[in-house]
Amino acid sequence: MECKLYQRRGAISYDSSDQTALYIRMLGDVRVRSQVGFEPERRSSHPYLCIDFRTLHTRLGRGSTSGSSAPERRVHRLLSFQRYLHSSRLLRGVPQQIPLHILDEDYTGQARCMLEKVGNWNFDIFLFDRLTNGNSLITLTFHLLNQYGLVELFQLDMVKLWRFLVMVQEDYHSDNPYHNAVHAADVTQAMYCYMREPLLAKSLTSCDILLGLLAAATHDLDHPGVNQPFLIKTDHYLATLYRNTSVLENHHWKSAVGLLRETGLFSHLPAEDSLNMERELGSLILATDISRQNEYLSRFRLHLDQENMCMSNASHRHFILQMALKCADICNPCRPWELSKQWSEKVTEEFFQQGEIEKKHKLEVSPLCDREANTVGNIQIGFMTYVAEPLFAEWARFSDTRLSQTMLGHMGLNKASWGGLQQEQTSVSEEAEPSTAGAEAEDDAARTDGNTATTAGGTSSKEIPQGSRKS
Image (cartoon, rainbow, N blue to C red):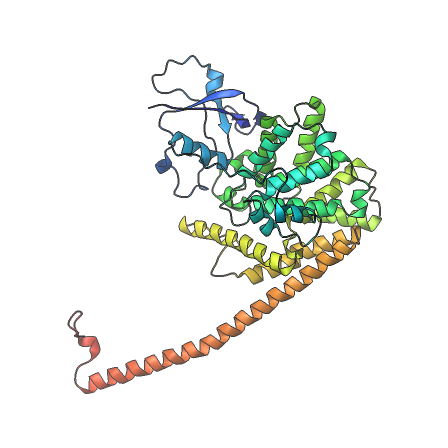
């Protein structure tokens, strides 16, 4: 029986004749058909293996007499993984779980009080997410855009903006321990803190600020909860599409552009301006690729050594926005311990979940993803030492402010705290080992005595047939 769904959706699409030529296709009201919905039994037992994200595509049923043209039949629609799940539920007749609306326009109580202090570095995004009923990303981003006057300045349609933010939050995977909408909200709040720093506050244009906030909110859009090496070694179609280069970041960017075009948020702007904003948004998101960390850090260090950073230069301002977003993306070690520890545990759990998937499917376990060989502490100490400290040291050279010193101070304390916890765990393990060894020795002695006694009686326990021994 054919199941029909009428829905307005824009999405990332490609023509099957050239799967590497990605383009954004804005579709109007379309009829999506499926004969039997989705067939999960034909997919891998884990959604990230072999999933191609190419769902809800228009196709002709067997024996159909539809007059659709051949080119239309070749156009497949790419949806985010979240949309795949929602759509598959709809096509199977399962009601879509629509998130509850966020707080009223006045906000309420504690949530409103927290927003008044949204520029504080110790802002508790976990508490804020609870106070906003799980809608921290929508609430925070909308508040910041409005606070800067960007809604009015860019004449953004309130309905389109609201719809865009809701769709962005929905396309983050809530079941990811780390790469979810709360992380995006946290990065957006950190980005706001950096843009308030004196060097940036007096130099950034309204367009810079708009792009910075949107990039922070969408920088991990539709993150599958596994890393790029995982996608490459499982021959995921995204890895092929982006030729194993910044695979996730390219997908986050294209997903964000898809939502911008679907909602028509910038449709009132001149086409050239809209396209330019999409390109610059992509440039910011692509900068968060951790595999290119040294590339950006070396360039940043060179600018600082030569003292040639000019904030009146548009390209230099854009580069600083890239560095700010990179800092915001990995600022967890620089937060107060109570917040930093929670993020550390969440990101490590996501690593370990990937490792369990790899073990289940007989794949080589990725570095840091083996639960048995790693701990939260040693992963975090290594990350701070080789990734976070070099980046934030250079950021402090660029913007030597109270915030920069606060971040470095927190990171030093957090690193020491993880080191202390590591030593405690090691001590406990060492104390437990002698006890275990002693118990094993006593057991061995008891078994030896028992065997000797049995042998003395003329019968060895090894000679008792299986099943003949009485209790």
